[in-house]
Image 1 (cartoon, rainbow, N blue to C red):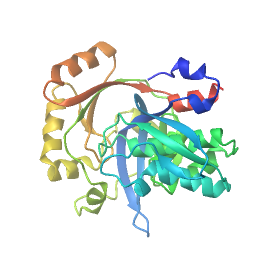
Image 2: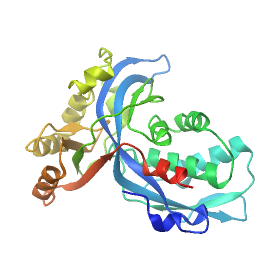
Image 3: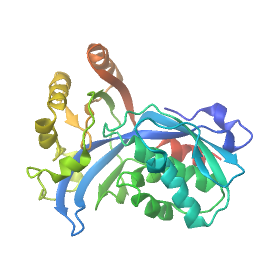
Length: 292
């Protein structure tokens, strides 16, 4: 997804539709566990051109509201609402906003949709409310909402460590991807509680990753707990090395060229909910903020 140039021609950023892109975890290693139970990891986040979109409208009542509810998510639990309230409180801002969400990313698929929506909310309202918070401040707020939020604020293909908050921009060849979404919601909590989850993988370097060390430590657990994910991995595996993103449920195969990815997509879309997507070196959200 590229920036909608019609948005940039609007009189004010309040008229923009703000992108919230998805991500893929190209690799995920669990290297330890903190005393508070959070898992230490190494991963590579790849931003892709598949996005939700958000629009922010001023209101006069000082409240944070949604124009429409998201199914199966209570308004107060919605990460977008929580992000806006957190930023409003941190800044001591008195105004309100009504948020409209165009939801395209599947929930519970490991693509980071809720986290990306939260990140876009923090970045957009920081600009719209003219708060002047820097990236590091926004990331510190974002990590309290979820481990995947910081990378969407960072906005670049990134090597991540810690619980996902230690980010390093990296440059890798940009690929095309077939993504398959099994019709099932994977519980991240259950995956990380599994006794069979590897929690002591040896740390690797970026060079190791580029040389091909790209496994996902959660993949074996998810395949065993969710037979439909196992079936999706086998279906995708016809076209290449199929991997789980995050804790799933989505699986993906990467391709060096666009035609090969499109052929795979055309060959599987009749049997699975599938997406053809492109890797992006920089998030369209960051491009939008930098364009004005």
